[in-house]
Image (cartoon, rainbow, N blue to C red; front, side):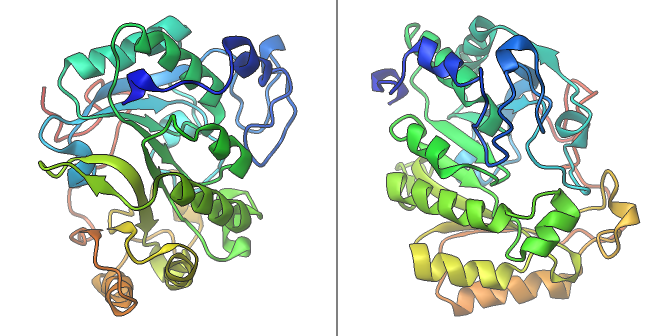
Length: 320
């Protein structure tokens, strides 16, 4: 339970990390406390676009009460196809205080959410940890979900041992050249794999309560991209050999050409049913029995998962 956790650093220690920021593999060294900006463009105070119950995550994350999702602005990746580009690249959101971030956590608990889901948290770890300590004083005790694009520094993940309950990383690429071409980071694969190994070492496979709600563990998201750009079969081989087949997988079919994708064929199209099933069948052949798959949405069809962060409801399916 979060309320019983002890942070490994003091408030001053966490904020001191922003004086020469090395939270992610970019290691920009920007003095965010003085207003300097690095690769991600983030400052010292947290920037949040939306905090809301989210009903469209995987079943053990959203459950029936929703996942209390905090969408942070800014990102340490530059994916040309990012569906959250309004907040990741456009930086849509509001700069808030630590107390307000803590209040968001408490409010989401009071709304009946099963967890607090931190989206794009990597560059905001000191702010999250400080807000968590404040929220804990008011009885906040929900599981924390670390929902990351996967470009993480293993040392930062180590710092979260005993703080994060559920890790939900993307494993976006197995080919460094594709990571460089489409997300602007040539060393993604190395850091992604080492960080996921650290996550798994901390919390193991996903564990559910008697109602099927996740309470601890790792769930790996695999976004199927057109033309096998993600190289997911190689990623599955890595998970099988370095982690375990008990890892829950979320094999995602929801890709659509967002942001600048139209200028980067084959990312300019949706995936085909054959491309998706090829990955699902390979996962089955390799012994992965736990996880979730999606329906392939035909080109031209409406998609309730497409976000619009300039609309307060964000998702078309959103229910109050």
